[in-house]
Length: 261
Image 1 (tube, rainbow, N blue to C red):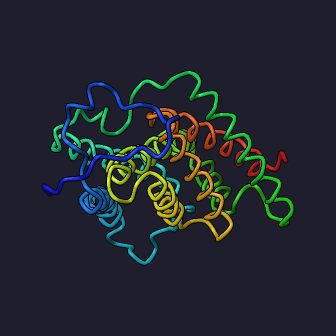
Image 2 (image 1 turned 90 degrees about the vertical axis):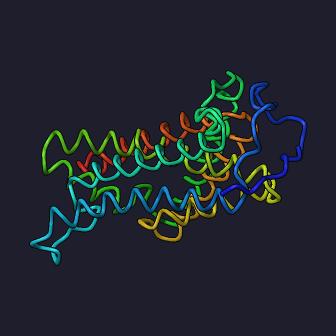
């Protein structure tokens, strides 16, 4: 994995400039090596968690529950995201970068946070209007089933579900897609625009628990987050926004699951 990546060419003048410390660092991993490291992180995380699930259910493999019916799916989700972050941080270090800088985990500018929230409000507002025009529900069956399964198991399972959905999943996904993947692909021949589109497509396709409309909504959010990652130069902005989206979604899911709305 020693391929070189050409320096990213600016496509506009309003993106955040690179940090001074980054100018003396090696170029990021190239397109294919970035993709390979990302797949490796998913494979290792999936193998570790999947192996644990098989071991725990070895005597009843035909009765392994679906994720939304498994009260401890949240614990698996937390573990997978932790493993992925660790693998990609190691990949960044192998490239000669401080892991936090490579993954974009830098302090954001206040104006970028404000612009991010304004953009998020607009996109979510348009998606919610479209949801009602199509006669669809704002909360998917996967979300309500997962919440009810955790609630029926007990307080600990419910707390883990909140931690997984509101913290672990947003942080892990942003580090993967807007941190590691964006760093390598935006500096490759794919460029910033191509990276925004392609990373959003893969991000949405990874959410197999949703139907076509849920995948479309996820693509829109993924494209917004990738654009904000480029504009701000910080993955911290997109993590903050993603956590906000998942928090609001989980609150709404709880209200629906308990029949309060």
